[in-house]
Length: 145
Image (cartoon, rainbow, N blue to C red; front, top):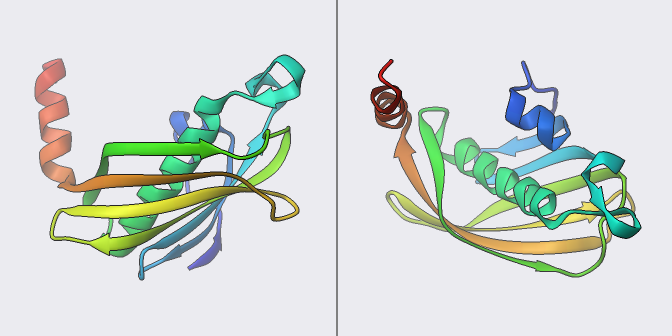
């Protein structure tokens, strides 16, 4: 599936500046486009690292969903990020892909590219693919809903 606009952008995705889901491939790949905005920057017009991390993390999670279906919630067990160049306002593309798949624990990698294709940051993550029903049930129980 390619060039897919989000059906309804949730508040988290809105706050991260999601523009569109470019690709979700069942082989375990995803590409998302974000709008890096000036409000996301600190001194010198550089996007704060938490946004960069969130974008790549979301791409890896979308790769997990593409691979396993909508009944899973990818939950980060470990995340490492390396920053190579400053991210500036404008369009950026986060890509994530599976490196090794286990039954419930999988290893992913991802990176962030600027509009010209320059790699700005790379990440690796260990994700647990949790059952959506159980995760949502536990969340409702925790808030007493």
